[in-house]
Length: 409
Image (cartoon, rainbow, N blue to C red):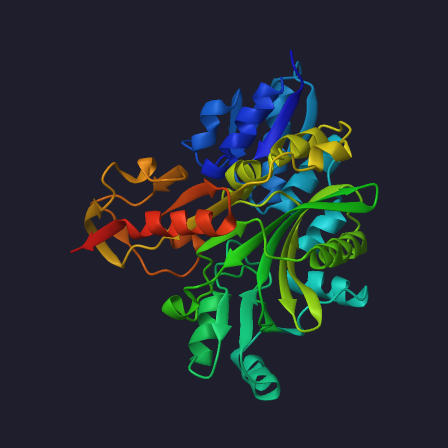
């Protein structure tokens, strides 16, 4: 029997990890609370349990493998699923390659992460923890506008708000804290500048960052105070000097948290003093960046890299070198709020046949109800394009988005 890889999460964006692992000759055991999770159809076995409660996950995993002692567990991992403590807990108990539980606990707490980074001299936005509306008001009076507010244990941009002079501070606090299990929020000074998503690989304490994707926030005013990303573009507009600076920054940040051998996803903003770290996580990011955009633009297979690292196989630096130079863009659909009665397209041959469109999906259908846009989970679908240049890829993506009209009752 082939070695087994445990994959935490079985949602749509994990699907490619399941397929790739099986293509690499591994047996796959998926873990997800939804028995109908889409990636389960590519799993050899499914464990239906919480992935948020690490102790419950561990008990369920151990019970499963007690019933299947013939299976040899090679590794545990996730992608597009920010549950570092769950992955680390399972790995530590079974004796698998992964980040430590101590590192995972830092990554799971936005305030603790900033404390560690700041102590290590890593550039981060000015920050402070608040636990009440009064504390938040005091900070507003001290720091002024604009500010970023988010749960210390936030995920998927839920509860992420941009505060300015028009914001109702009491309502903002109430909204953001509703997404926190621990009732603690992090306030940061808003750093104005280009934002970049990075994918790095730490190998024996050294960082290689082969992926830089420019993040698109053109709709901030439309959905204020909620901070919702509406797309991304590769290749990045960053200069080579800026790329080197960011790679050094990520390496220092990763080492400060004990990440000597790990996948590190970074959220970076380029301010007047240089690159700042907004957030780090220890798994490949979602939003179809690694499943589609990175292979289209660079030819790099980071999913294969992450799987090999999870099962303890050696990674060569050549695996992180681009072998093609193309451009890829993603844009998301934001249907109007209300009951969707119909959808129309101006594309003569349909969305999929438009120039450069390589993948698209509209999650919301006629008869569904679209709620307010408050996080990335409220987006109605996406389109991914490719082209010879960044401008052409972005233009194709925007044209594809514009071709769809949602009708609301």
